Length: 139
Image 1 (cartoon, rainbow, N blue to C red):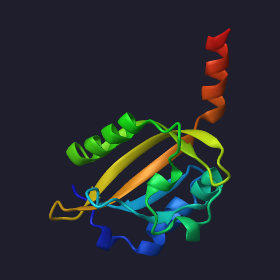
Image 2: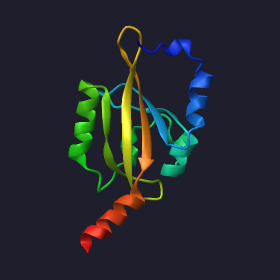
Image 3: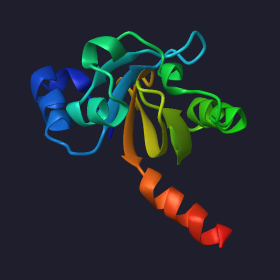
Image 4: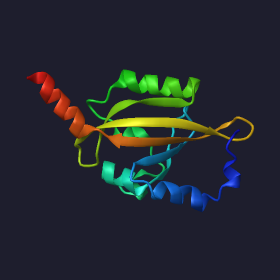
């Protein structure tokens, strides 16, 4: 059964995301020209240190930097094109320039005709875990 977004009141749709402690971002589905944030919850803002106003309309690439894995990001894009789904870990940067490791799940929402509409991404900051594992392996 396909989700009919029109049947869900937008206010309640985003209120559910706002209630989550997990960072959630919604982008349009324009992979070829580059997706843009159309919604982020407060948890996403806390994780990235950006405000909603700074994020909305921007491409998620704004969170990438020197240590971002370009090959993985290309795989992410390919998986979204093929399956409409990605689960994995990325390396991103906060507004203050600090690095964070992000375990994320991204899924595609289609309209009733099967046309891509949105990508919903749910994140989990695993920086502390990743650093602890790196230290343990260094010993």
